[in-house]
Length: 590
Image 1 (cartoon, rainbow, N blue to C red):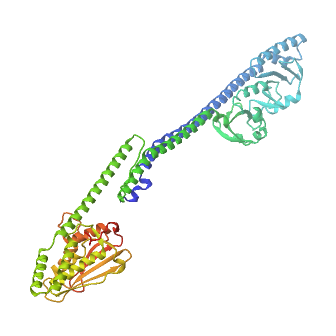
Image 2 (cartoon, helix red, strand yellow; image 1 turned 45 degrees about the vertical axis):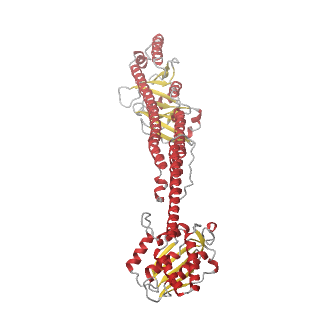
């Protein structure tokens, strides 16, 4: 029998194929996941680098532009016409003032048109209390504006935020310390143009840009409608904690954004860009979809492989294994059908052919054994002991000489019935009643032969056992063996006792003798002969009986030998209660 452990699930070919396939597929799945994560990170890094590069470029360009404005602004401080108006205003004639003012306005207009970010260029002359710009001619001095702009001149920022406007300012100091400057040159930046420049960064839906000063105050912002509602939240964010040149995730109104900071120390401003997280993921949407398609397809392939492997390999192998198990248990009525024309069909056909051949061989061997047993029985029947025959005729001769006609009639009747039973060609099965009748006749003949030196005590056969079917000649050879080998040379007190024992499944016939020739070695030899399964060994009458009983009733039946309490051999004939009743014939009929 197979060990069940050998066929546990973890030891099957099916599981090993599935595990092998998974080991092949898992690296592919892991690579796909890694590739997806790498693409997400690479895309995010590319967007971050592009956004940072654009913002830094804008700040650099703005810084260069403001620096150029400052150069023009400081050149105005040395403008001849401006200095002349400041110092010689009172001594100039009206014509000279007009010419000088027109020349100065032309210069201011030229500076104004030098950059799209300049809204207006103004000069404020404190000494004559006059102001002038590229947009307007000379006008009254704006004392408030002059003072408030001067109050922030000392700050580090080049760009000054005042009253909602952005300015660049330069002043012409007097010769004495702490004295009022002679005049200031003011360049007002165009917020609209700067706003438009910031708006150019809002290339992604839902993004926004904020410009902040060094003190954290928001200078201007360009926000898409999605971010306009988060203006208050933006103002409260500690954006100064963001690291310049890096992209970090922040949350605004329960939405996730990537924030980018670019800073200019020269200008004293920082620009913050906000890009929705979805923007980063959107280019990967199709890839994400295809990634799931790939994963689901891979899982489908694994399931399909598992089902196909189970149906085409594991299931046929399991069928073959189960068939072998049935065959091992003695079931030879097995036939495996397989529709597919594959290797398993060939294996099944060979298996069916093997089972058929095995069944045929077993039938052949079984029939041969039956025939051999019957031949042995016929041989046993035909083996009339010459010594028994001679003795029988000698007894008849003696009776005839003495004129004992009554015993002659009894003896010849018994002898005739005896030879009729052992020589007739009847069925191999008889009733136990017939078998015991024949054994009793044989015992009476032997008692006459041995002149009452040997007594045979046969217990009456129980009524319920009379119709029990048994093989022919199973008791008489045992009695013959007792007479011949144990009691034949005994001068007196020879004794043979035949009794019966019953159980639910078996019936036993016990034959005991009082012989004194049985040795332990002889008993062991006899037991060994009965246990032997060698078909080539010499077959004796006792071995023949044992084999026929085993074939008729099963291995639990047969002969058992032991030492009898009477001193000689004790033979137990074990019969099964189930016999071949349909084959039993009347042994008394010819």
